[in-house]
Image 1 (cartoon, rainbow, N blue to C red):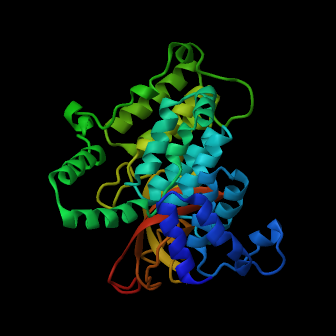
Image 2: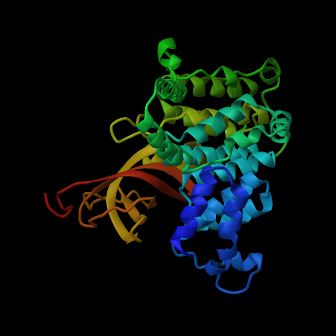
Length: 384
């Protein structure tokens, strides 16, 4: 597919001509499959650098109402690149359409993790907070309100170019429009005025939730009393307002893995959307490896800094992975081995101690870190 075709499709997408995007791109789908033209062969494609192709085709289908096509093409895009916030928001909204708010929240949270300033992901979480029942979300889908949360990458860039042309002509009216846009885009932060981190009024427990905070059906890891559930939820909000997100996350995890009522679990998960992505100098209440190892589910999605030696280093130019020998920076005592995954490329020296800032994750019973930052000493571990 000629690059000019994709550029044409992007321009049509920015203009809202979604059927034209589909007409431009869909004939070229076969260039990205190994053989045949079945849907199954589409998933076994040799994609090369086709992520934008499938992203824009999938989003055009979404906007055009072809949900089946959107699912197919966005799935192909995700197989190529899993960390694109626009893609994650698109998949989140697909889950919302099906009423699966838990999965939608997870995808929005992942988008915010990769880009804390991603407005659409934040807006999606706010939408779920304000439409906090399946019925409310269903009505929003039927009314078309959900379309406001369909991603439109590149549209702002396109309109900025158009505005640049208009700016050459100048005019007071244009300046007024810019002022309005800026006020909408950068509203006054009333949270700071109030002296609190965020307004959590939408997450306040209702009287019926307080009256029946537990659900004994199903299976759960932690069996909590009614008082313990309510206390954990209260603590989660208190820790958040004190900027102790790790402690808040632990309380959220306690609730999610307990016999707490589903509505309380739902609001606890929404609270995670407010948590910040920390740096080496801002992360607080860092959990120790031994504590996490003893009860992994309790610490999921907490941020930690673990040090040691890197081994089995692999990189493909865009991503890096390695095994961290935790506590082995001095080559004396090994606490454990933790896989590290970075969605960025970084040069690592296996002879020097390393520190990893990462989010605690688990898959298939395996503990690993999704890294956000790497710091490496300049002194080799075998030298004192």
